[in-house]
Amino acid sequence: MGLFDDEFYSTKVSKRTGNLPNRIRVSRKRWWPKTVKNTESSTFSTIQVAVISSVISAIVSVSLFAWIVYPGNTQMAFAGQSSYASGGTDSYETQIMQAGDKVRPAVVSIVSHKDVEGSKISDSALGSGVIFKIEGKKAYIMTNHHVVDRGENLEAVTVDGVSKEAELIGKDRISDIAVLSIDSSGINTAVELGDSTKLRRGQTVLAIGNPLGLGGTMTRGIVSYIDRQIPVSINQDGIYDWEQSVIQTDAAINEGNSGGALVDLEGNLVGINTMKIADTGVEGLGFAIPTHDVMTIVDDLMGDGKVSRPYLGVYTVDLTSPYAPLDKEQREEMKLPDSVEEGVIVLESSGPADEAGLKMNDVIVEFDGKKIKSTLDLRKHLYEKKKIGEELKIKFYRDGELTEVSAKLTDKPNE
Image 1 (tube, rainbow, N blue to C red):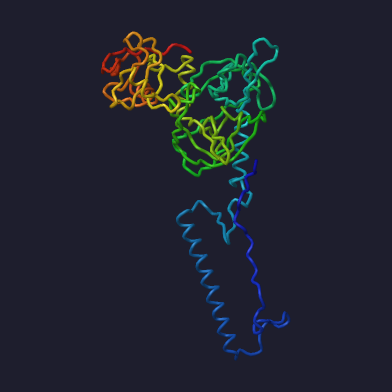
Image 2: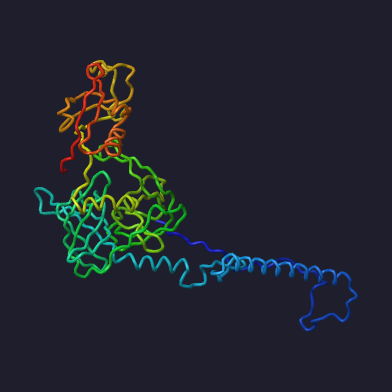
């Protein structure tokens, strides 16, 4: 693992090399020539004076311009000197340290314990979480769904090493967000929320969490991309059936950082670290869910313990899935016309879909007159275009015939 090397402009001016002309080698004891008849020396001195005067004039002009345009900024850097090198309260390094000191007490390590069947050994997974609210005897933590999903007993460890039993308030697989609560005794710091919609590419951000069990770790990077759409497999079956909108950063994010804080130089939370791309030859590709999206989910989880979304009740696979390609014989068995090249095959139906009459091997091609090419299209139409209680018009092929039915969408049952 490499370290980030800070690059600063050098304040040193390189010295000239080579022999100086004999005519300007003046003895240290002799400060002024006896005569001024040497026209060549006079000409050289005139040029020197002109150059120096020009440089001084330029500096004065720039200074006056800066003073007029930016009257509040009296600190300037000359000759390539970094304005961060002064060590003042507004220096880059000081901002990083102050932001880290502000946020670290609000970042906890999450330990998810699961008892192994037939064994006394407990399987544990590590992650991170962020305290975002302290209310009465409870402190509330936001983290990732995948950090707590498989755990039966949850534990939060504060930055000073105090372990507290954590209670699951709610979790949402689609957004990968979960909320926990712990006893608030000894908890004095909750993170301040930032505005992730105002982030800009190149802006410095800090990732704070519990990578590889090393709690309180802070890494630095920049915002590489603001609104990256990353395909994800919600069911972990290798089929991409959702897209996650994330902040891309090159701040080091490793296993255990999930659920931790991504903050700006003001120490305000702008994202929840959630994933990285790990492959040979790949580095600096980490992702965080923006706080703008996170808090919408958190509010629902705090209120109802879940996120309510329209539910159809179909388990599907894409007609063009590379993992389960439909061969010619299967198409003939389903009597699927050759013209139908995109859609989703129903593998299982329940709830509203079952009540509407959808069956195994039906191929859905339209919702409300809009073409459905994949399971991703199906989910996005349901979650972004429809509401609980609304009617959904479904067109599908069965035994070679195009059929249309309507289904009344309900709230998704608890997982």
